[in-house]
Image (tube, rainbow, N blue to C red; front, side, top):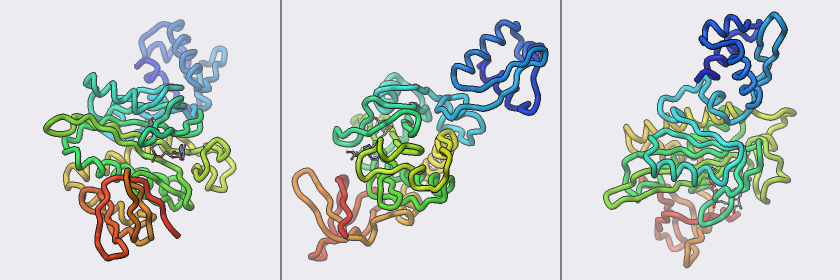
Length: 322
Ligand code: BT5
C-alpha cells in the first residue's frame, strides 16, 4: 500500500523532484522508511533517481506484470481487483485453481513473467519464456452449467483478438476453439479449466498465454508473436496489453452475464478465421471433415459434412484444409 502511495506521488510529479520531507509528510513515515520503500520499488524495476537535497524522481517504470503497474489506470471493476504476480511460476492456471479452491473471489488474476510448466490442453505444454509473453489466469464464478463452458473460451478469444487489433493494428483472427492467429500463425492460446459440482460450475480458471515480444526462435513451429508480426523496432508494452485484455474481458463477461452468449458469439463469428473454410477436426476416436458452417449458441462448432449432414463438435483439434 505504502509503495503504491509513494509511486502515485512520483507518477504525478514526473517532471520534478519530490523531496523526502514532502513524501514523509504525505505518507506519514520517517525518511529512513521512505528510503527503504524506494529501494524496494527499485528492486521491482522502477528507475528512481535520487538527487541530494532535491529528492526523488521517477524516470521509468518497468514493463513487468506486477500489481502496481497493472492496477495503475486499469479501467475494470472486477477483473484485476486482486492481482497476484510471479517472476517465475510453474503454471498460473495451477496457482489460480488452488486459490479458487481456497475461496479466492471472482476477478482475482494470477500473472507471471515466466512459466516453468505452462499447460496447454490435453496435457500439452505451453512454451513460456521469460519477460516476453503474458501468462495470465483469471478466477471467474459465472454460475453456468458445465456444458456452457465453451462460451467462456470464445468470450476470452474475442477479448484478446480485439485487444491485439486495437493496440497493434494487426488482423488477429480466431481459430475455434481456443487459438488466436496472426497471418495463420498461433500467437495466443486459451485454456479454460473448471471445478464442476453436481448442480453447476463452482469456478472457472480462464488461462491466457499471449506471445507479445517473444522471438520466433523461442517458440514452437507454427507460432509467432505480436512483435514478430509488426515492423516496429522496439518492444511492445506487455503492461498495456495485459490491462487492455482485462478491460475487454470484463466488457465481454458483463455482456455475457446480461444477455447470454448470443452477442458474444456474433462477435466471435465476425473475428473467425475459419467459418466457411474446409476443416478436419480430430476427435478422440475419429476425424470429422467438412465445411466449418457455424458456431451455435453453446459455442459448439457445426461442420457440414460432404453428405450435407450437419455435425456438432463440442471440443477437438481443428486443422484448416486448403
Ligand atoms: C492452448 O493449448 O493453446 C492453451 C494454452 C494456454 C496457456 C496459458 S498461459 C497462462 C495459463 N497457465 C497455463 O499453464 N496455461 C495457460 P493447446 O490448444 O493444447 O495448444 C498447445 C499447442 O500450442 C502446443 O502443443 C504447441 O504446438 C503450441 N504452443 C505451445 N506453446 C506455444 C506458444 N507459446 N505460442 C504458440 N503456440 C504454442
